[in-house]
Length: 290
Length: 248
Image (cartoon, rainbow over all chains, first blue to last red; front, side, top):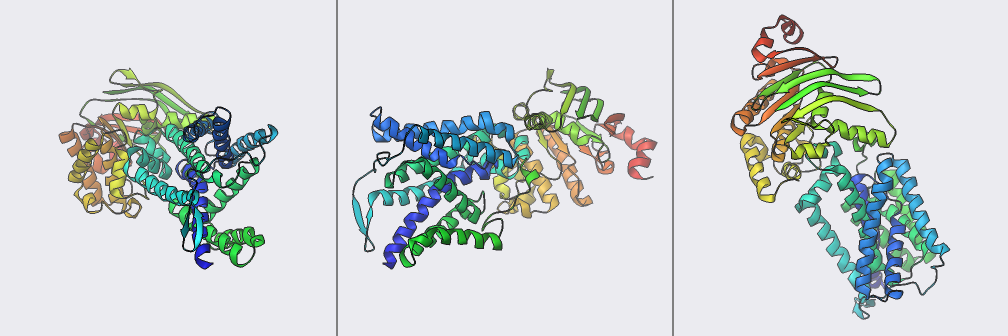
């Protein structure tokens, strides 16, 4: 039972990491806390579902299109809404949360609720890992998580666009003097965050179903991971996902699933009392970011 | 190369630059000398276009109203409304005051970020010429910029501006907070850049003593207004400058 719990805890941790990494990337680069993150996650899943079931496109094509569309929605959100409230944290939160609410409640209003709303698994098979059955989809999630983290690291350390991301994350005005168009980079950061949410949805949704409520859950999980890890720190996201992921699964197996949520929230409380900026976070002065 | 005509900058109703005019010819080192809050940084921000970006951002969030009047002619073209990233593409590069470096990145990474607009090979070449100019930086290339001393950060900041590839280099208070020895090293490097790299330099300073000997022309600015201009040698002989800046 112990090994099985560990296997599922790892999977759970990677799922949390995938949900949080886009939110964290956007915040780390442009300082925008995108509270529509969960809605974008659900939006991409519904778009994917519609392309698949209404237009009859093959799954991988519809997944690809839904990721592209969500990325575009992220960019438009920045260009038309966020650009005006940039640097005012509360307004950013209210604006993005409002957009998220509108997206999610629209789907609920249109009646997109039920078990038929789900996406197919990529490959339908399962393995015997450390004494427990694990299906292919969960293994793919872990593989994709690892590839994504490595890819993002390569991107931010070895491409000029990625380096520009790191520059504007640290000092926007200095980045401006180096010829980096900060509005453009911030647009890219929000759309890349949206794209990562869509990618996460494409691979995680097949384990469950698509519903508007799931959007709020994803947002809360992403926030929890980022708060524990320290907003804007990729290393923090990875460590925090594993802390919460393991805490949840071990509580499930050894105590009771009623306690899962309480243990995660307690983890947040403990970290925040001991280190208010999160495990790896550095509290940035507000005026430094504007 | 650069002509500033009757530049006026308001922050709300406060006049930061009042009818300021200056000229910079190709291959010169021009100094803008003034005390704190004289308008040096506002001038540098106007020349680099940062003020345009600040104005847009203030306007979007309904903050301070920034108004810019006047002309800035760069090679004959009026650039007063051109945004900063486009001015950088034209070769106008600013190194802001207080050694602006990215503290979380290593020295090498700082220089790479500065190469955003350039091709990979060009960046590599530019970085090695920066290390030639400031050999101290090469030994520190894997250290985080936040852990460098003030002098090292200033060298890195100038190095970053050089990687961008300036034709007109704007240095805002490059000597601020540096020891006299480091000040001399930075001034020597600026002269070398002009002589060997054919880069035109505009620098602003409150310390007149180390820069007056090397500048071709100086503009003394007080309360946003031009009060005196002349060659470096003339300014050094001027009794008012002597009493105000040299204390004799």
